[in-house]
Length: 23
Image 1 (cartoon, rainbow, N blue to C red):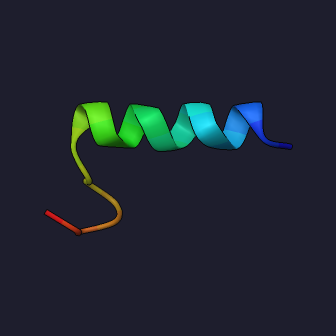
Image 2: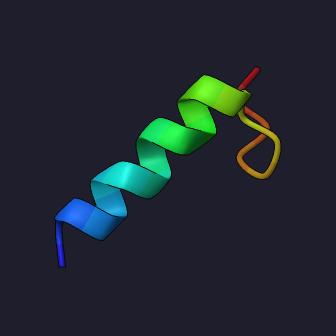
Image 3: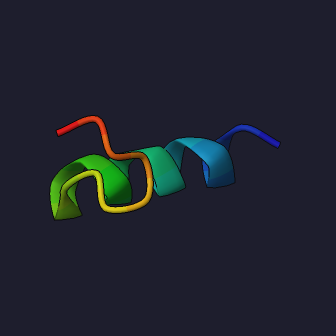
């Protein structure tokens, strides 16, 4: 719990917020 969460967050930021919708 931590590395996976961070990795997912980073991937989202790198690929753009597609699921978050935070532009």
